[in-house]
Image (cartoon, rainbow, N blue to C red):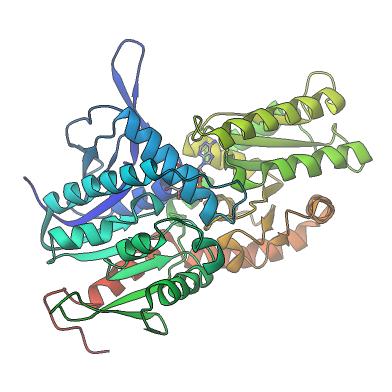
Amino acid sequence: MPTHDLVVVANRLPVDAHTEPDGSVRWVTSPGGLVTAMESVMRGVDSGAWVGWAGSPGEAPEPFEADGMQLYPVDLSAEEVRAYYEGFSNGTLWPLYHDVIADPVFHRTWWDTYREVNERFATAAAQVASPGATVWVHDYQLQLVPTMIRTQRPDLRIGFFNHIPFPPFELFAQLPKRNQVLRGLLGADLVGFQRERDALNFLTCVRQLLGHAHSHHDITVPGIGSEPARTVTARAFPISIDTQAVSALAEDPEVIERARELRRELGDPKKVVVGVDRLDYTKGIRHRLKAWGELLNDGAIDPHDAILVQVATPSRERVDAYRQLRDEVELTVGRINGDFAPIGRPAISYMHRSFDRREMTALYRAADVVLVTALRDGMNLVAKEYVASRPDEQGVLVLSEFAGAADELRAAILVNPHDIDELKTAILHALAMPEDEQRTAMQSLRRQVLDNDVQGWAQSFLGELEAKGRPDEPAAAP
Ligand code: ADP
Ligand code: G6P
């Protein structure tokens, strides 16, 4: 079995296998911010490996190489997809970690499967890591993996990064099996979060529920039996985007031309307002549509002058809350278009599919305003992509205070998306903002995003992990 010095473990591989009607397999980029970020990090790594699921139930494809990286598919049966992925990961943890915007559901059988599947990912990673290698585990689907890997391979350095929020103690305490989850995470040497608040929530949970003391960000985890105590560090590493790659696309003359063409195709309105999200109830799409519908109804927006373009990537379509969301969003878009669209052109142009990076960048370049109205979001990369796509320093970002990105992107128009009146005022303010004001805000946003890219994020996480020393070495002097 080949071995690797850096092994990434995530629920999804960076590509999904799609089986065509003729039985052939087509590989497409997997959805979501985790893959967007980690794919560009791993492109710069020599002989890295990525352990993950190929996106369909049944037997996993053989390991294969893509973009100089070795991919190791892990198989999930249809039942495991139901209990581990749709169940415990996305029916229990996702809503609980996102402020219970939807009701978390819990079944004991889901937990059993979550444990079994986590063990499979841990074994797959342990088999391909070279002696003393670094294993970097990602996200809420795999919280038990760090300790499971440590048990199998005590020689490895183990990092864990949580891409989504970590909830306050009062919410986390509701999770059945909460202590097992914390013990799973504490198998890592370094546990990373998007925001300082997430790290503090985690530290509080560890202290309250397991009784482990911490000094600042360092937790002392007592050894079992004669084992020495370990120090686990938990702190914030705000994730970012591949700023250079996005900037290069944004400067590409074909992309700039495509942005002009998009505006023409939309009927050359005075203002193009854009939303780009996975179709997820955390993204505040319903709130955004309500605000837009009311602005049309109030006559504050003329549908001949302004159009809302909403791109919604299909997501977790067999989970009830997502099905319901899709029905509601599509009903609302239909109603608003029925009530307000001029002949031959929608008031809201809605697309329920994915587009490639070039098309997305052209859309960002065509957008006078981007609306990020998440009710809760770990980071939200769309906000950063928009900023990186505007070398012309024009455009306005309306950003929810409840997205991790709001900690950094202070020059956006920050909103509480639960307050529909406030959201409406923010949209009108964005639509009316003069060019010089747009430029000042965009310059400040761009400094933040250009100075903090995803490569810097990965270096800082891996650098800190490395500085902690190998498990079998004495810790480096501070
Ligand atoms: P999440 O990880 O919750 O989906 P993020 O905003 O952090 O949210 O990341 C979403 C990523 O998916 C971004 O890189 C964004 O450009 C991409 N994306 C979202 N919707 C689409 C779409 N319809 N087509 C292509 N890419 C999309
Ligand atoms: C978010 C999560 C990722 C997940 C992605 C797409 O970004 O943090 O872990 O992969 O959404 O969701 P999916 O369920 O399709 O993998």
